Length: 135
Ligand SMILES: NC(=O)c1ccc[n+]([C@@H]2O[C@H](COP(=O)([O-])OP(=O)(O)OC[C@H]3O[C@@H](n4cnc5c(N)ncnc54)[C@H](OP(=O)(O)O)[C@@H]3O)[C@@H](O)[C@H]2O)c1
Image (cartoon, rainbow, N blue to C red; front, top):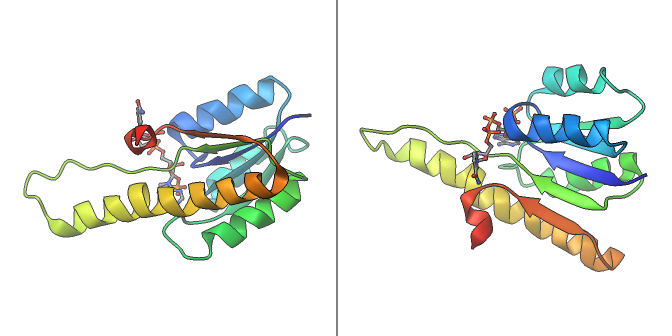
């Protein structure tokens, strides 16, 4: 069985990708900050879904990713779908800084952790949907 980890699977694109992979028989590990949403999705296919609450802006998120990989028994695909975006017409700095903490710092933290896991493992796939992925 193929194994995927999805960060940001509690809504939006990440949740829909999770549902598609479940339909295709994948075993998935899902993460996000909202524990109830993780549990709700897990209840739809308990034998195929492991969950881990984590916040990509926290320094301990890579450790929690490793915990989720262990629960899943390994990882073939890492999919980062966590991201935020706000209209900010008054250009309040805190709104932009919070976006950077999630979309830039969180991206760097999580993709680095996934890359290092795959480097040790000898292979794997990384997919990211945010615009920073192109960089
Ligand atoms: N490349 C493209 O064409 C394209 C198109 C559309 C969207 N996007 C980008 O893709 C991202 C997701 O879009 P969406 O429509 O799926 O948004 P969404 O429905 O708001 O989902 C965002 C997901 O990110 C998670 N998340 C947010 N902050 C987090 C944090 N600090 N730690 C862990 N998880 C976090 C949320 O979970 P919790 O709230 O439970 O933490 C949620 O599961 C956004 O960054 C958006 O800009 C890209």
